[in-house]
Image (spheres, rainbow, N blue to C red):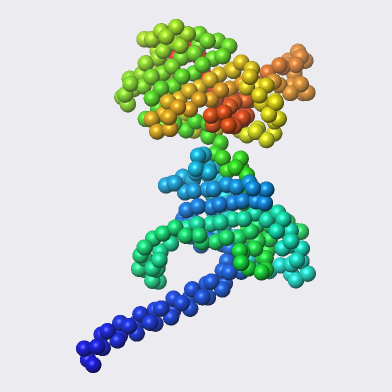
Length: 351
């Protein structure tokens, strides 16, 4: 009997642990089944899938320290930060009243946005001390509906639950439903170029209306040995300002567009613009990303209010221009204020 005591104590201890875990899990399951929308540890989230009733979907996936959109785009960091902050801080105000219940549920069945949240978990987790067998699992599924009448909250319904709840952010004078957009455009990063100097192999800048100003920079090594080539005649420029070229190459680490125009312009208007002669074309060969080419086009000034000093119309907008990015998939508006530093002609770099 004495020999069996250690085994009995171990079995008794394990039985107590099992009962405690079972009770905690049951309690947590019952609580979260209806109203546990918030995510306590957003750093464990690996994927977020969002879909609406019109078959619009987005898949956001954590890739190291960044997020990827639909497996091919960089997701907008600020949008991701806002979404994760919302899921961490959102709180339940109250269940939907009985009088409003049917209307809210019927409305969500029509326009509700489905949100699936995946996160890393452990098959064995004893008091957050012993964690074994990590794996990815579907953590929560809920539906996001309309804003409340006072515009201070949104209706959310957990999958499998019968009653929706009013959910809000304590610091927000508004509603959270717009933060769960199923539209791909809402999540795309605004980066046009984000190549570091160490990754750039070559850079070419073409001037559509002044071909003699077009040039290419080839980087031979990381010690600053560059070749500057005049593209009009493939002439190698031997006397150029090294510091200016270095400033040019380091300017491509973070260049962004202002807004996407895909859904604001008709396809016919976009085709008309990109069929016109380009103003500039920039091609970067990046060791990690491959080649990125962006074409830029003039933007006509708005006739109203835009006049020159003598009262005449300004035919071209000198503040903004159009561009075609992401291998021609996106048509965007960009600012000269952002891109002027990389649009200097060849003669600017020659001594």
